[in-house]
Image (cartoon, rainbow, N blue to C red; front, top):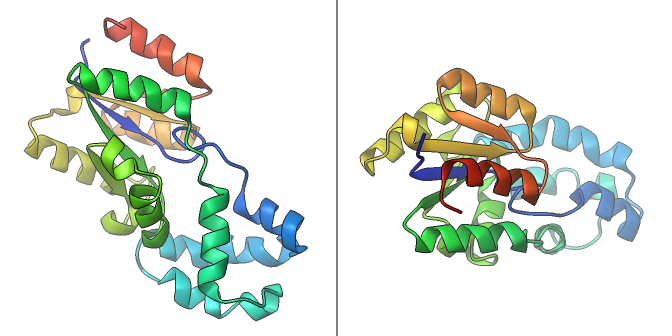
Length: 201
């Protein structure tokens, strides 16, 4: 079945980096035990636009032991994860030149989405960025995929035109249940192998 557009996940697919909390522990001796509770609970509301990340971080930085401004923490965080998957992006560029459309589909809060779009140039690489903070729902929730498909339909793409790549099995299963052909991403070869079965690539 020929595909006309592709949904690509961000972290650990089009972006390769270690966890921010791991780097924070290595560089600043801030233990995971202090940060993981925040990311497990409060951060989840930031991901869907219900809370503002900067405001919520201000509440916990002294407890973490971070002595600088919140903007400095975000800069450290975002720059640490500024590791584009150049192999994958090279393939995407080649396929876009052949007329295929690529869209980023990511669970991310608004400040990092802006960094990814502007500082990492993903806003130019991808035709559009679909993010949980703007949609108010995360993958694998049905509402996320429903929103994406509604937007793509406005561009002339049907659900059958879409192929989705994500490294999270739960996200892939959720998309499949919604009717989107989806592939679990392991590494660049798995991407190329799948692409090669449906495109002249």
